[in-house]
Amino acid sequence: MERSFLFVPGTRPDRFEKAWNAGADAVILDLEDAVPPGQKSSAREAVAGWLSPARPVYVRINAITTGEWEEDVRVLSLPGVAGVLLPKAERREEIEALAARVPGAVRILPIVESAFGVWHALPLASAPRVHRLAFGSLDFQLDTGITGEDEELLYARSRIVLASRTAGNLPPVDGVTTAIEDSRTLHADVERARRLGFRGKLCIHPRQVSAVNEGFLPTGEEISWARGVVAACEASSGEAVKFRGGMVDLPVLERARRILEMASPGAGPRGTRP
Image (tube, rainbow, N blue to C red; front, top):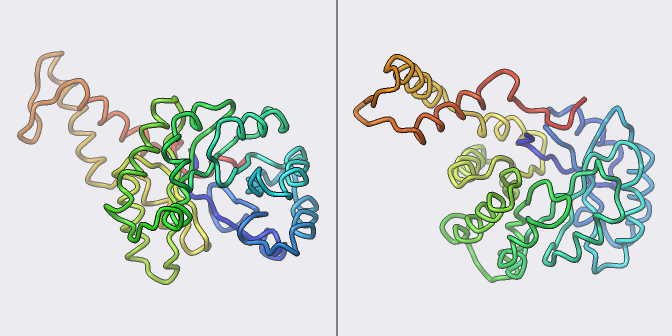
């Protein structure tokens, strides 16, 4: 499961290779917000020219309501596209239209970034071919007039997490942290997202990748706890067991097993890499 999704502007082909080598689980070649209106065509050409099956990446296209959508979708049929991020996702019909136009192997990640989109998160998550949802927190704040990243966005984040689980998707991807130079803020943002049920985060700079990858892995303390729970249960021969002052029932044991699974060598980053 990808943890870090690194954006790179479609207008900067000189950065494509650098982004690919930055250690992110997934690279997103951006044709939307990072590209000025007059450079959309040249950005598409740059992305199409760099795509290769040896370097599977995601592409963020323009919203279906724009005049760029049709041309963007043509790029998605080229070899080397692992997935597509659909911005401003609000209606299931938009995703259905996209799913009908892209190869079956291409993952679809709708970006939920408006009040209407958050309110209809479950229909979006349940739409055909949706792999997981992403939260466009900045645009959501702009749309709603909300100021703040913590409890101010708790309802929106929780609704996206619950919709993802209800639809049977992978856990969602949290929005960007704009404070590139502030490692404390980034660590706090990743920890908050993890506690709320997200299992990935959008990145806007390569220096954010390492902290995001590590932040979605279990901590040493969690691994130690999980190993202790499993060992205590195995030694109990099926009887009720107490561990560190608390009773261990089936949900607790299952949580411990999931932590150990996440911490196993094969469960690390690099989800879209060959």
